[in-house]
Image (cartoon, rainbow, N blue to C red):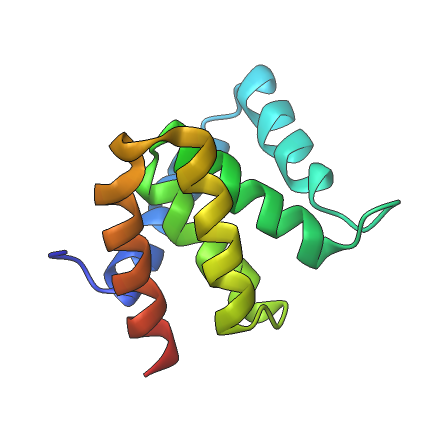
Length: 113
């Protein structure tokens, strides 16, 4: 991977500010809906973030994987839990997920350093 987590987060924040600042109602509502989906309810935030990580792996979105790894880490997901989440994503997504699993492990290692 070429970008560090700090580069990723700086770019993400800058682009989100630019996108949301454009004032498009549909985009702003979608971003708000995405945020609300991860609020605690019948499932806690930790479980929802783990679900988001699995979905991101299956959909093969490295930006989403990075985001959810950071959120999971902030919610206290353990290394063992991460490995189980990764295994579910791999089983559901198949072997095409392996390159994304490699990058996910690299992000986790960077975060845990």
